[in-house]
Length: 101
Image 1 (cartoon, rainbow, N blue to C red):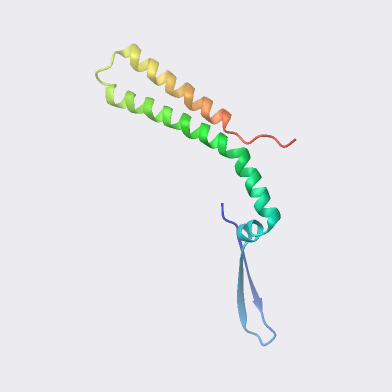
Image 2: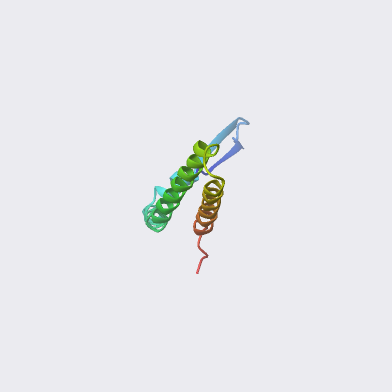
């Protein structure tokens, strides 16, 4: 995520000047910001990996369903659709942001 701020100011001689600031860069550029960024990475990288794994599983199930949907037995097709829906729901439920304590 990139946060920026900009402002237009008028100088004493009447000219207009623009100033812009990359807030994210300013925060991460400090030692405290770098430490906070590392802590967030440490906390959320495992969840992202878990999410990506589940997302790949769902994509594979959908691919199986799409490729074999016309020649596959109806019960197998329904089973794949239900499994895909269940995994998709589980992925979105486990990837919510944790509550602050």
